[in-house]
Length: 471
Image (cartoon, rainbow, N blue to C red; front, side):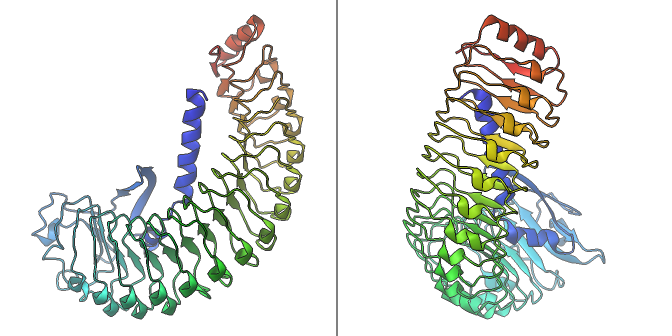
């Protein structure tokens, strides 16, 4: 894989992760009266906050006016955001007398090793409590049972090994709850059984060998469920059967070998399923016939050697299908032929020998076709000639000896073409001449003849970045 291809791959992965990362508990702060705005930029899985209407950055926390604060339209301070402050405890001036209208507190990356939540019981109107990326190893939640309006609670990115969730059974208003990225080896979710407003739950990125999801059974309120990054070999999803409002299911990086999707059949609002980076070798997509609104299906980086995608043929809202990094030798794309909303098809890094792109003909919304790093010997690009929105085509790192690029001539959105590292000696690049949209062309790693190299150099004079590195 060339450096350009690697860079592009990394960019795509970051972009995808950025779009699907589980930030719903923080998003509620954004939505809450528009008082806090967060950037969506991600750096080393840490959020960068954009402070809006925030005062006092000299970090002298002894004075009220030196707090980082968010001021409401009526002049009342209703939210406090401490990000990367060095705190060993809650500031003494953080109390209901000084902040009688407080609704949101965020202590993000402040190095807290312990916290006394009883200090917050006076904030009867507190709705959002974010304690992400600290150094907490244990926490007593019992004081929270008095916070009857609490909606958001997040301990993402701490070192907590055990926690008693029983006090939360009395917080009926709780709608967003995250224990993501801690050190739990087991967790009892039964106290959540009483919470009928829960929309977002995440126990992702822990050390769970199993997870009893039965306390969540029948939770019609849940929309987003995060179960990624644990150590399950298998996971019983039967508790999801009646989650009629479930929209997103995260099950990435969890060492899953077998998964039964039957409980998902009938979840008509389910839009996104992420099962990347597991150890799945076989998967039956049959139950997805009952998931009509599916938009994203991620099965990348597993060990799938064959897959029947026929159950997706009526998934008319499907936009993204990712099968990267499996062991597919063949795949029939025909079931995709009527999926007019499909935008991304990624089947790179498999063992495909032959591949017909004919089923893609007429799928005019596709922006990315990526079949690189396979063993394809021949490929016909003619089905792509009507894909008006196509921006990226990658057929690099295969065994292709010749390719006709003429179907790309009229694609006015095409920006990036990679045919690196094949076995081509002569390539007619004329269909790419005078294409104002084209920015990058990679043809290196092929045993190119002098005529092709000369034509590539001519193309580079038009402003296209052309990589012609010899093998």
